[in-house]
Length: 100
Image 1 (spheres, rainbow, N blue to C red):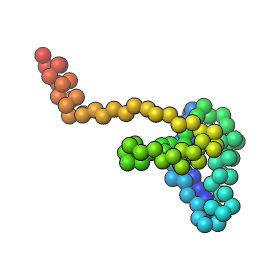
Image 2: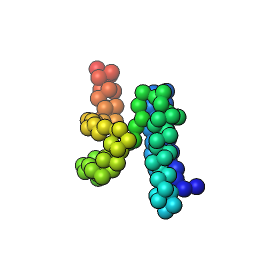
Image 3: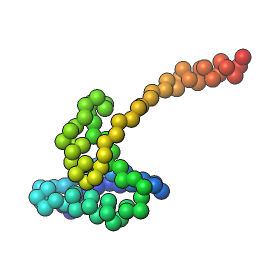
Image 4: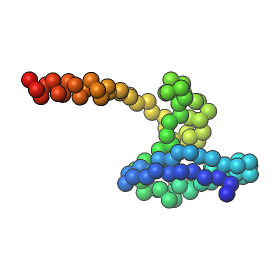
C-alpha cells in the first residue's frame, strides 16, 4: 500500500480524515490520485466532500499550506462558530426550573 484515506460518510456528506502515504506514495501522488477518484467519481453524488479542519492549536491558528492544498482540489475554507455548554450547570438550571 502506498497511500490511504479514511472516509466517514453519511447520506449527504463524505468526510475524510487520517490521510497518509509512504515515500513511494508521496513521489507518485498516491493521495492525490485517491482524492481525485473520491471527489469526481465515487462520491460525486454527495452534496458535500468535507476535507475537515485546517487549523491547529484548538482552532487558533490556520495552517495556510494545508488550506491551500485542499483548495487545490476545489475546496473552500469557511469559519464557523463553536459553542461550549457546561452540561452540569445546564442540568442544574433545568432541575431548578422544573422544581419551581
